[in-house]
Image 1 (spheres, rainbow, N blue to C red):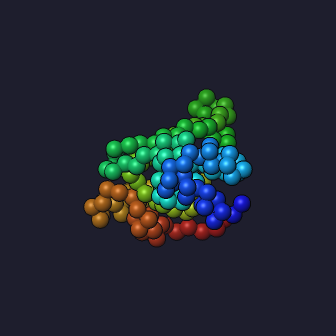
Image 2 (image 1 turned 90 degrees about the horizontal axis):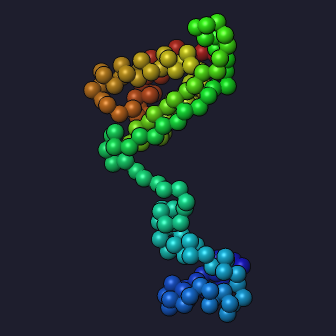
Image 3 (image 1 turned 30 degrees about the vertical axis):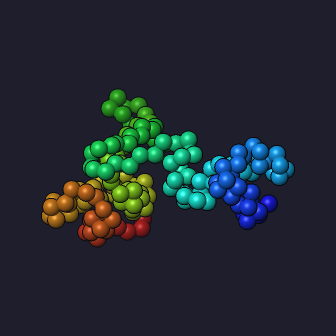
Length: 154
């Protein structure tokens, strides 16, 4: 069934409040095809669909430090511990939800998991923030910090 045919049936539900179960029975179309989520998606858009029908609760912080996200994972590398034995380290990240996800992606793209480069990039980011009296890391800040580094292929 194409989208127009489905909408002809769903329009009866939306405009005339005909129950979906009745429409499914009378038209021979499966109830699953007449999913109320599709009505929401068609009439109200993707954001409304996500808010009403996705299982994941989405929130957006409106101010810095209003909400944080954290992740804790064991890395797939071995390091020599203080006792001389090899061990797998843990990486814990805590992000301010207000921070632009594009900035995080830019850092990941620049460093490609290279911890030495990450160690060199972050002080430069702090320097750019301090010089420009900023408190939020943006793509522009990251690009300025990256421009001060000499990054070569080994």
